[in-house]
Length: 320
Image 1 (tube, rainbow, N blue to C red):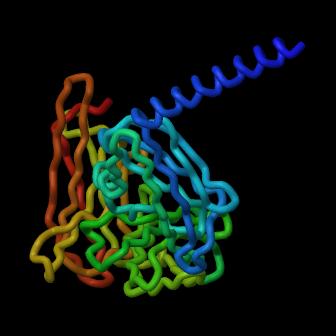
Image 2: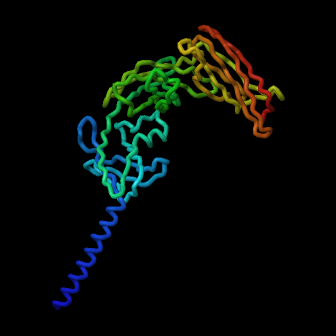
Image 3: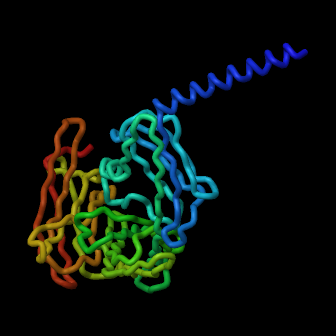
């Protein structure tokens, strides 16, 4: 009996020593990255934050979610450079900021892990603000569905991509997780062959944990408009697959800035309603895959308030 107990004890000690040795070896070869995600406003841990661990060339290594205390850990990692990307739920801001490229985001979250090292990170998340509102027709009552609202983080909205939302059946839109204490430019665009010129609202202030309401009214009866058609100069048929581009001349920048792009209807017709007075370049472009050829034309137009301009593009392509 004593021999069996001694044997069992010896076996247990043997495997315990082996496990210690294995753990020691692993601890000298592999490292780990652990951390905690807290709210910037409260300092308390945040549960359920999704974290992705990448290599710097974008390869996904592992996933993790924070526990109820906001803690997370990645184990058994080889030495090298890693990038941590945090994907928080609303109302926390996306991190990093949306206007950075993927490579920039990977560099922002860069961590160097040495052999056998254990790194601990504390990540602080900021609560964002919300812009919401309604889009109506000219009567101020009838909602408009399918209008795209884009929020740009600065007045340099021609250079920086924004965050968008589209109005629902009730004409409501909501844009969440915006950087607080910032001024935004809001641009509303109705996508259709009979396209309404984008409406803009400047200096919209956003505060954390608060909703800023901004409404738009589209006057589809506005008499200032450009009416046009895109047709084949070869056979005279419509080219509904063509792209229409609108560039506006910005006096302050001394150059043309692209405002929007859309497609004509099945008859090649389009209209730009409610266009602001000014100088524009209207461009039409199409590509015929059967003959592998592209053609494009452009016109420079100066339009006054209440004026209607009619234009026709003849592209040197056969209809499809």
